[in-house]
Length: 364
Ligand SMILES: *Cc1c(COP(=O)(O)O)cnc(C)c1O
Figure 1: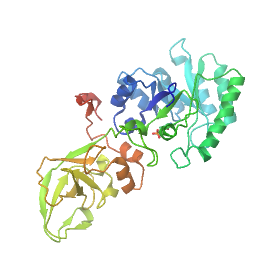
Figure 2 (figure 1 turned 180 degrees about the vertical axis):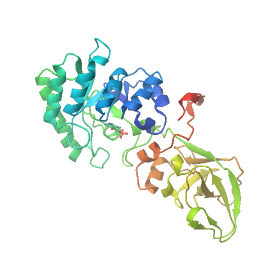
Figure 3 (figure 1 turned 135 degrees about the vertical axis):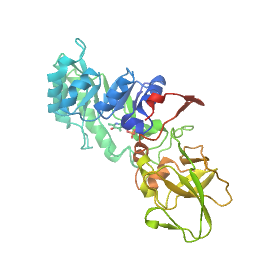
Figure 4 (figure 1 turned 90 degrees about the vertical axis):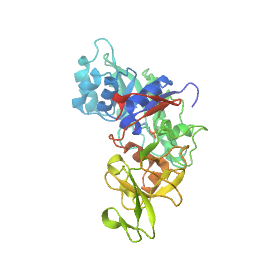
């Protein structure tokens, strides 16, 4: 990132499954200028945990949520006339005297949440003439930053559509305090423009949004998912494993039961395809992944006992285990979906500089 560019840490979806409160605190302590979430409920949870920072709600909110958003001092993203009108009706509920900061999201091609350029300008003008409101930010979001031509083609077109909006605002003396455009992929490509900050999600968690985009040296996945062997048993030739009997033992094999399943976010698509790290080797999933349990084959010659640790999803340091990107390839999805799918019932433990940070009330 250019030195004058800040970082907004995107902690939506429980910080991509990592735990929004713990990650939010660490990111702010490390210099992030604020946090971004998708929903009012996510912002409220951060406030409840005592986080006082700037919190931007990226997604659309319902008119019935405006009251809570303002009282919790969450910064709302506006892209429709209806939402701006709802905010203007409720704005007296926020702190008296302090204007309410808003961001306007411009649809430059994503066709998701955002206002077309003309409506964006109109919304900015309506915010500017209301003394109770302040236009803090204007932004857009790229549809193809993670694709191979990520800086050219469509992303360049999108950036080129944002530019005249900013120029027009400047000409009308309505320059927002901030403007922003880059997600992780655009940041890794250096496609930040001269924006005030980047909105970084996946890369913060040590995972690249595209295999062709290398992360800086030393950046590695934050999350390691571990379990323990719950039972060790023999399979006789012809024995079948699990629901539907989709795996049949070819000879005398040894198997280990792992108490993790699709309800934990260990996806059923990994049945007979996935593997886990065990004693530095690779233990293949045999049979179907069920809701709460999975069975792996113990590699030949490996001694395993009940209680031994398995690495279900590893970072760079764990031998034998797949990482989130490899698991997502096996499931025909993206690492985002693997990480955000790790269920709430999986306990999170936090380690920083080799020390466990004990925050039992923040698990989840
Ligand atoms: C989720 C999101 C981001 C972060 O995207 P990553 O690819 O995880 O960096 C940035 N901006 C918006 C609007 C988002 O919804």
